[in-house]
Length: 365
Ligand code: ADP
Image (cartoon, rainbow, N blue to C red):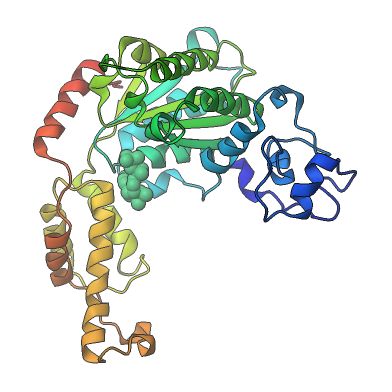
């Protein structure tokens, strides 16, 4: 994401090396101290594209504390994700590129009847790469990436969620192209009328729907894409479905994808030494039927501990003296042990429900 490589401000000279107004100076001179209420640090002002201690005009009306939260907690500057980093999910990757990446790269070509959807919904079991896909979209179009889970909007910033959403979309609009990834989006846009659904969550839902409408691709100038993710797509209400007309199923990884994940980490291509034949890997792939991507990741990590445990057992407890050369390669038996600790986290009955939902609402080529 674009914000990743920002230089640290020079504390003596201010963000752009010029005059530092008094209200920003405190934060610049003493970056360790918590900013006073209503005072944004110079770093945040710079992140938001301001200069000389002044926010860009479009953001000046927003509450500074909310802006600070958006930048610190939602703006995601972690590493880039390439399509190849996502094992399998070929159908989803192709569709995502065509439906949202191309239009973001060339908005003038994709207007009118070719206009992209306002939002994209990724649904499927947890740990299958939905967040990775969101990050890959942002990386591919050099967009700023905002990553927020709805449950934190609902519970962490109680009563502030609505303000956060408004600030989030304003900042995204300002730092476009931008991708806003909202995990567990069902918890905001739920169809359920929770008894005692209080005023705050109703207002949050309304604000979210209003802001999603603002993501409308009517204008080639507005390049903000909303990507919602959910494990409970059936809980979304009609208003939400209308705003995310493309709903894409992100299933458990197929056998080839599981094989790819193992091969990437182990053996000649991977970082960890292993001694596993093709037949061993084939057995492992069969054994991990039903595992999610994150189950696979945990399983591989667990199996890679096997040689370390053996080495510790051989050398006594002198862990600090053990070097990588002392470790034997990872073997099939390490995976056999690891499958006892890491089982498939998704029930087959849940998969049947996703498939049913997919045949009714999912986007297909
Ligand atoms: P979710 O679908 O819940 O958003 P994530 O994208 O956060 O899942 O995946 C969690 C972790 O599991 C990732 O960081 C990655 O390590 C691993 N993972 C999941 N799916 C894949 C995949 N298709 N390819 C590679 N790694 C994956």
